[in-house]
Length: 164
Ligand SMILES: [Zn+2]
Ligand SMILES: [Zn+2]
Image (cartoon, rainbow, N blue to C red; front, side, top):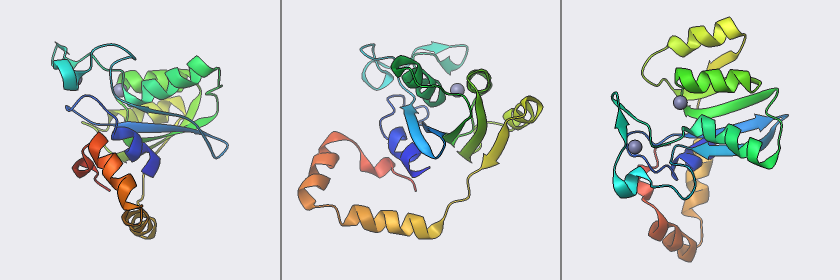
């Protein structure tokens, strides 16, 4: 889940910065965040592309994990997705169709309808239980990064968005 949060830091739509990590047999096989497809305009640069109250410029984090796996020829069958927000219904359909068997979400996005959809489909849905010791270790780890590396990271993104 920490890696999903790191992925979310690269999101390019400020309506929601989401990240996801696809895991198979305890190995990370793909990561994703919500943003426009490669080399297309991003919301943070040109604004949102709104349709019926939704920004449609971006692919969602979960979609991008599946697409990364597809691009590199990696099976997504029997996988778990760790995601910073529970999947929207469109993403749920794609995850299920791609063979994802378990969804672990950090927090609920909008509503809990995806819980029922998972149950009907036989997909395990869990809300993530943060481990305070691990979070404390992570913050220590980042404090101990060499100063020059922290400066390089600061120059690249806004660390204040981190919300562990
Ligand atoms: Zn947007
Ligand atoms: Zn979605």
